[in-house]
Image 1 (tube, one colour):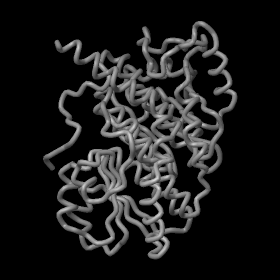
Image 2 (cartoon, helix red, strand yellow):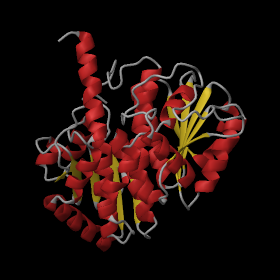
Image 3 (cartoon, helix red, strand yellow):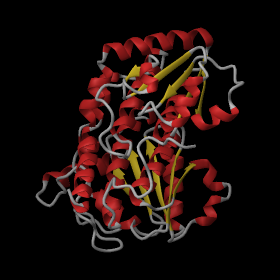
Length: 380
């Protein structure tokens, strides 16, 4: 297989992982062995009143979302990067500890397992990994077949939301897989969003509450797929210095939902757009935008693929519904059906994945084909 054929197959594997996430969520949520593990962990968390969630990359950001959600239930829950726990957190007396790793085999995971901590639980996709063999809960579906974390992230987050539901958070697990349907349906404004962000030098991703953790995931994924420098900022932090970077060279992706602090994030996104930043607001609260996109999707001109196939042709090309690029002071809104910050995290993650693919294509980069990265880091 030549290099171009390998690139095409790698990108196709990424698209298949993205498109199959609703089914993967269903499998995760109905898996009896995983539910048993979450029951045991929930019992330990109730007994201690606290939990430490440890992971790297996308696994860490899923843990950040879950930690915020669980704190809302009155529990003392923290999320730390596994590298920080390895070198600076050994004396922390927090138990139980949940070690989350899609591969179950990264260098940080291996070294933490060697310590043999008590009260240790795990989540992984690979039952044959060191973490899997140590008795971790196994997320069904097997190891991810693409390098970027897509299915592994949403399935891991679904498992953590299942845990949250067992600990008193209002989570309807039955609604999680169907919530991905609008995010996987045609969203014509994604192409306009990719066009808007195509020429920026860097991208800042922002949100509040659970969606601040999602912003961390989005920044990692956008960096990985588009090769552009991306950073995550909790939305309130923007007003404590980073707003000075606003302008045409800094793109912004803001994540928000109904209720909570959503209106604060919307206002920030529009102010950044007003300061000259190409800004995209992915919003699970704007019913009008969601309805408009659904109407466009039904028309012959709508984009038919759930991954962003056609690269935009201009720096701010109109979307498939003919809408003009947003004016100064207004972020481009990509709307999803109304949901609160917890229920919106999964569909927003899928839209971010599709935006990352579309933006990679707009920048002429084969989506999911790495230059420097590997699936399982073996070196710190």
